[in-house]
Image (cartoon, rainbow, N blue to C red; front, side, top):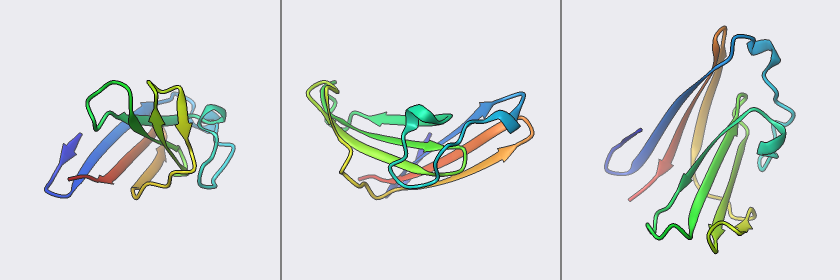
Length: 103
């Protein structure tokens, strides 16, 4: 995780000895992260452990995001955050790099 004056950058590598078996069922925005091999980040920007923002991607770069309230019990998946992601599948797994504007 890195940041600059305007953005938060999050990178990850998911090791998979058989990357041909990575599950990616959808490429559309607001895909179902539970039906895919996915990486998810939750930001508690209010630092109250009750509200936050969720960002997820699968190995092909599909995006899903949502607002969380009431300690995560209520999810607003209609919220569309401004963020970008780049992914890459390699012979040992997959990478994701997420950029979230953040001030």
